[in-house]
Figure 1: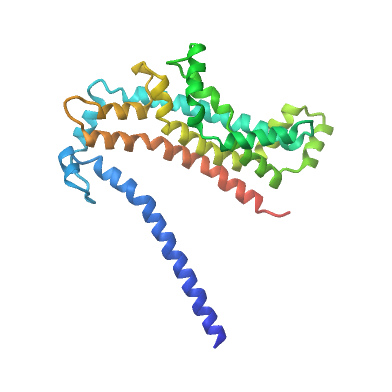
Figure 2: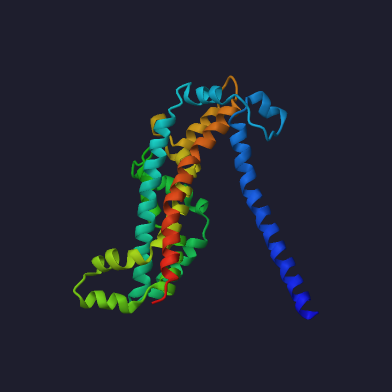
Length: 282
């Protein structure tokens, strides 16, 4: 009797977990599906309410999106350039910082780590006015440098990478590389980075998505339309003085998420391969 009750309880728990997982999956998919559906509908149909059936207005929305001086491919290139550069700088230098804090023993190491944690807790908007004034004095407004270089200082990524190193990085492996004659940079690039590939892939996804979707900072700093990022160009459709084409806006948003999905698919294989490699015991 107790055995059957245990099996029944286990079945109920599994069913509850499955139902909860299906609910969260639907909660994630439905907004994206509605976005794709609205990308095929006209502005009048969108104003009438929500529909689960795709429309037939996608070609017109594309003409709206690419017309009126809307340089979608230029926006793609600008966003991709900024996102790729900032992602590479973010994950590489954050990994290097975490490596230095984790491996080396020096005076002020604890204070430095405390400063990194405090910076991570501060909201980015708190220092934005000072950041804007600083960029203005350096004559870097309407330039991509303020959108790329500050990504080096990513306190949250440093925290994640250091915690990951504490779990997987063996200091004996680093000492062995040094004994073999490898320098510090060679040890970091050839020995440490391959071990950190799952964590790097995960943080690269977060950094790329954050940079790609960043609207506020480019909107404040960039003034030349030729340098607009894709989110800025999509927002410009809403500022039409004659009519707001919601179908074109939804199509622009749908197009803008395609690189994010492709980047995630590309980087996720490194996460999976890293987990699989870590699960193999000699």
